[in-house]
Amino acid sequence: MKIAKSFIAAACLAAMMSCAKDYRQFISAPEEKFYRGQQLEAARMLLPNINQAGKDQLLFMMEAGYALHIAEKYEDSNKVFLRAAQIAQVKPISISQEVGALLTDQTATNYRGEDFEKVLIHMYLGINYLMLRSFEDAAVEFKAVNNELQKIKAENGESRYKQNIMAKYLAAISHELRADVNASEEDREYAAVEYRQILQLKPELSMTKNDLTYLQSPKNSQSGELVIIFQSGRTPVKVSRGKLLDDSGMKASVAVAISMRNLAAGVTAAAVMASLAAAENPIPRFKIQSNKTKFVKVTVLSQQVATEMLENIEYTAMKNLEDDYGRLRAKVAASIVTKTIVSIAAGIVAQEVTRKLSGGNKLLSLGAGLLVGAGTGAALFATMRPDLRCWHFLPATLQLARMRLMPGKYTAKVQYIGFNGAVLDTKYLNLEIRKKDKYFMNLRTLE
Image (cartoon, rainbow, N blue to C red; front, side, top):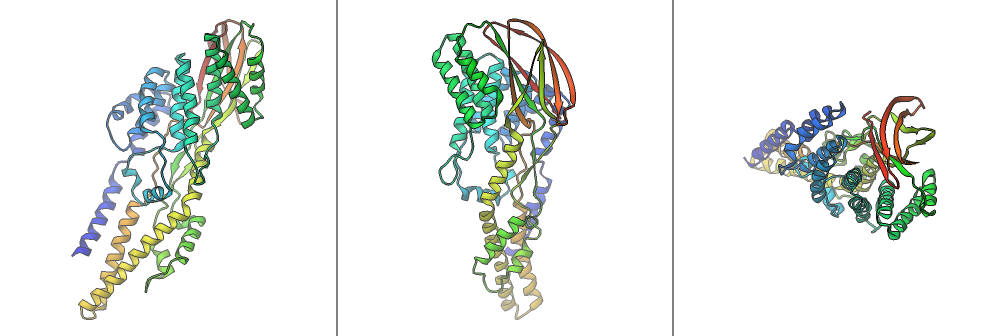
């Protein structure tokens, strides 16, 4: 009777999970609005969910906060992002905890956020503050990006991630502004330190040397500056890797894990592999979406600048998840093999016990063995599925360009350049440059 109840419970669990509405279904309609250019409407669809405690609350906050950012509702965006930052604080988690979570239904748990997503909350808080001309608050948030990255350590205690160059650049610009407003040499020196560090991290950046030279030159210029922030394309989204054993690396790790175990009587390597044939890989992967624009070219009078990529969100997302996969694969395989062996062994024991109690009835004992093994396996694989939740509205890259101009009103010609060098689109944007001030132009492409 207990065996039958176990099997029925496992089947019911699998059925409920297959019918449950997940985050990807919730986000579908707002995402369609967002990528049609209706960002404010997308935010309105999401806002009711940010005040409801639940497993996807952080995701709703990140999506709504970003939609408000693109809709130029910067103050409202920060109200949402500030709450999201509190929920998404980077907290260390051990490998054993990560592996244990992977073997459960992660979609039923509170979404913790990928590391790069957590730090980008601070990035957008900072950009919002720049657009609101709250430069001191902006500098705090840009520093927080790299402070959070430094908290994320590898097993050997070293930082897992490099510094975020976009955050360092915008932090330097924020301190430049503070230096000009407050005549602060301390802020000017902080900006200079940031530029030197950026040159060490990415020496090929052509604009950094010019910015450092200009910063250290005598401050007798009356010019202002146009700063172009360009967010291109669409971030990758998570998808399933497919069947567990379809991945050659995971299959090899499973084989190694089996070879290192002393198998119980009647349990064979072939039986373990056969039991895992239908199992889904619990670790997802990121799939590239659309990114048609390589850079933006901005022309004002006779001056022309092109944006340079400082942060490749697309690459970071994919690399981080692949690094995690390589780091966790062997331990995940070992845990799965252990659970599978227990499942098979339980079936063998049940078969033997039933055979004795039934006076040697082979058909009945075989049925009992299959029921226990199948019930345990069904429960395991019904809950072991990848968590495909992720931040959908992000761009693929973050880019920057700067142009110094004398005070006055201008019309900027903005050309969106594709990867084949062709001009995909052209826009004309009005702006006003003030003496010793900066005008921020925040651009986003959706394809």
